[in-house]
Image (cartoon, rainbow, N blue to C red; front, side, top):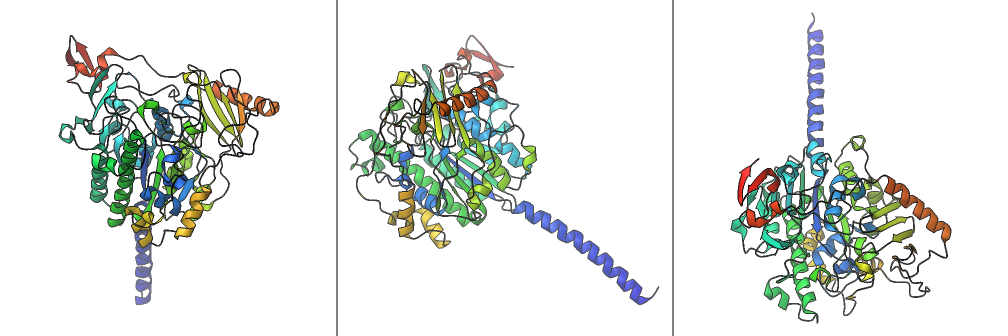
Amino acid sequence: MSVVTVVSHSLIRFCEEMSWLVLIVILGVASATRPNIIFFLADDLGWNDVGFHGSNQIPTPNLDSLGVSGLMLHNYYTSPICSPSRAALMTGKYPIHTGMQHGVIYGAEPRGLPLNEKILPQYLKDLGYKTHLVGKWHLGSYKKEYLPLNRGFDSHVGFWTGRIDMYDHTTMEQGSWGTDFRRGFEVAHDLFGVYATDVYTDEAIKVVNSHNKSEPLFLMLAHSAVHSGNPYEPIRAPQKLIDAFKYIDDSARQKFAAVLSKLDESVGKVVKALHTRGLLENSIVVFSTDNGGPAAGFNDNAASNYPLKGVKNTLWEGGVRGAGFLWSPLLDSKARVAYQKMHISDWLPTLYSAAGGDLSVLENLDGVNQWDALSKNTESPRTSVLHNIDDIWGIAALTVDKYKLIKGTIYKGVWDNWYGPSGREGAYNASLLYDSHAGRILDKLNLMPPKEKVMELRDEATVKCNDSIEVIQCKPRDAPCVFNIDEDPCERRNLAQLLPEVLESLLSEMHKLNVSAVAPNAQPIDARGDPQYWGRVYTNFGNYETQHGSSVCL
């Protein structure tokens, strides 16, 4: 064999080996460069509680800076209350299709999000993500198999039920009370007295700082704020911070402002930590409320959905139109108000797609992939949103294109009104955005728009009622109502009698959806779950058997 032949064969073999090496490196890089996903979920935040929706009353500079430099979601909807909304987020399905459409899950209630549902962190783990939950769960805790560590999360620090006191970490439900704060499965007694928002912030930063950057990160920070706590003091924050809001006349709103400012600060600190670790440039950051705000004393709270109608747990816009934004350097079109119609169930396919997942593995979802529509500012693939159907309470609402159907109401119509505060008094200080934790980072990355653009975007994102339209009263307990939400976001002009064909079309669509619904899985409270039997701690009582106050492992 000639020297030339030997050299040629050696070169071919070297090239083949190098090709495989290059392919391996490419595959490794592709895996390592999946975007980090950070999902901030606020609890009971109202439409009008953020500065980027037009309120001047409570500064939210970290949220505002991320919103104006990303996408402020203008037509974004959630479910009207906690557990159903979180179920939709996790499953990509309407609550009527998982049995989660009626009410919230209580700590002593023997149920949870059905175990046959594969949920968001499990899908992301299939793509190699490390997954962490900090804060609230509220999707079932009566058995271990329903808890976060058995449903796709690698770690969890927070609580299992629907609400806690921000300092003592107890919850009062259904005539009883108990501690509800966990590190994994263990009760976190050592965190007693530490303000919950600070616990979450510190834990989230710890997750960020200890994360192996060669793997993609999914961090969900589900805040307690701004949900009310226990009746003895439902809104709690550091007194020094409350004193900073003395310019607000309503004392409850002062406290609410302090709780919200801690939430805003937390988001900023976590974003700063992501940047310091070099993770932010390849991250997708989502901020969302889980439902509308409890205003005017509803749930002993002081949120604002102004000028939208209704409160949390109603199907008016104030109950289901969610404050939220999407931020990422990976977006093609940024720093704008996003008008794409979107539902909280869309996050699963949207984030899975952005992470490079194969959408064909997602079956029977109600959520749709919005990544391209949001990133490129093209038309939303969603034309309708089911707000809920609850045949137990006799309420339902659906939006198709620009028309919304409301059928029935809750609380006998007591909360079917408009509630402030408007927060429009005074001036908006855009300079605060550039001096916030998040704003300073974004400015350093040349991602913050100039102040003139900030003010322009904020004005565009501010909902204004159409005062020129003729008001036509809606009495949903007597007859269904129809509203043109594009022209009448404040739901003041009932078009049901003027547009009978639209009404019939919406009712027909509602009927089709209701036929597909599964029965609600709500259960009566189980006395075995009372914390008095478990050392005054809410626990996974379904894994045990109580016998005269003692417990036996099943």
